Image 1 (cartoon, rainbow over the protein chains, first blue to last red):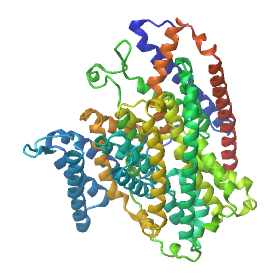
Image 2 (cartoon, each protein chain N blue to C red):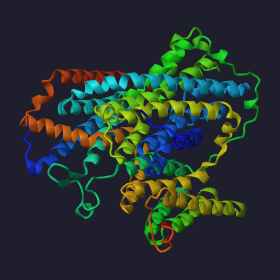
Image 3 (cartoon, chains in turn green, purple):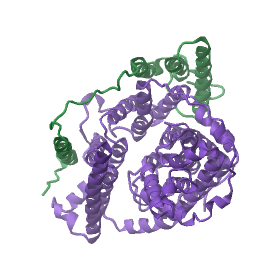
Image 4 (cartoon, rainbow over the protein chains, first blue to last red):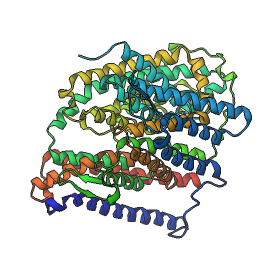
Length: 145
Length: 495
């Protein structure tokens, strides 16, 4: 029997699902532990390393930091300018700082940001984050975000 | 009857070509293509959007064969088995022939699954019309157990992650009594509807991948291959002589695997390849570079496309992660997929069939003749593409609810969640299916139990319910046996 009471019924399903998850978690730990015991290992083993050996610290953490920076800046500077800056930085992060590569990165950042901004914001009329650098052309009825 | 015009044909071509590019670049998938381009469809009506999305889907699945054959790296997971015979053929200089065999097989697989879609969806819908909330609840439960059956050797982890997806989908406000659960009070204004599907999905399938590759240092350099494309062996349609049974069997394996929720193309092509080997007159030749292997693999993974749409349109349950994205396209346009879909939206239903037909034809034309140029796609450096993809993902997430930064944070959060899933071996696709079905699971459960005044017996008293219970039991039994066999095989391999 399950009593469906109006004021508390929003907790019925979450509680059941949590119960199921606890059971499943126990099942995972027990079956995998037993399998280890069978193959001569201890029931519980220390979890392996999280990152792969000699992972690329700069690119991984750089991606995370740039991503967070990108989101924070969107509302301040507006979509187009923020994207030019961060697509450029992502390109530098992934391809390096050689002179030729920097120039390519800059071209990609400017061209792709402007194309996408115009395509989504103007042609498709999708709302993009706006900020200080967004310009509205009231006479023509469109905004470069 | 159905919608088709110049615009629709143009977006189909765009979709197919972009799909092929995504499919052909190793590491980028059809799911990613559809997810990343979904925001483009905000500007279109549903029918035009469907041409674009189905084009991306078909193109993405097919594009995977190019690197599979030329450089032995499957472009999408579903092309794994294409490498078995495709690459040996390319190595002996028959690359172009192998590619063309793959393209024709893909086309045939797509067409056969289209017929299956056309025939079976109305049947399944008609059956599902008789479903009350009890059966609907059980069907979703069934979908969640099928996930288990197919998470090869990872059964429990698959189900666990499926239910974790259900739990996360319940975060937010319950629609009946408007009360929040599992949401900290400072987020309540933003999370009335919980997390939005689109940012969750793009996060899990696109952003997570970028983090993974960043960790590995994005050091991919693909060696240029030249002699593989020498046409020492010419393609001819006679290559398909004697392959009729193989084509039809593989297409149906693909379609059937597509119907089962949560099963990716890789499971379909592996099964089809194994069947082709079992029934082959000369099984020892498979894996050495014979057309038979490519035919089995490519027919089945394109067979998946139509198959995965069957449960989506008749039951509202996505067959794979790509069709899960399609669900959100329907949601955005305010159309409910499920048993009533075909009767209520006959024009959309016809349009889907025509669009899928057109996509397959366009795919064939865009790949078969210009294959020499298409094969250059595999050299596009991903390092240059990822920043642009991040930008498109942000646009998509931001526009989900007409412009909220919160959804962009959701995107990043689930990117990290997906990345961690990969680390602790929890299948992200299971999580996604659970996340999509979670709210319905709850609604049907509460409806059923309310109607029965709290008695759980209601789930065991209806005959259709029994059938579904039987299916649930069968899929769990299959899961346990298959899980054991897979683990045994793995242990034997290690020993």
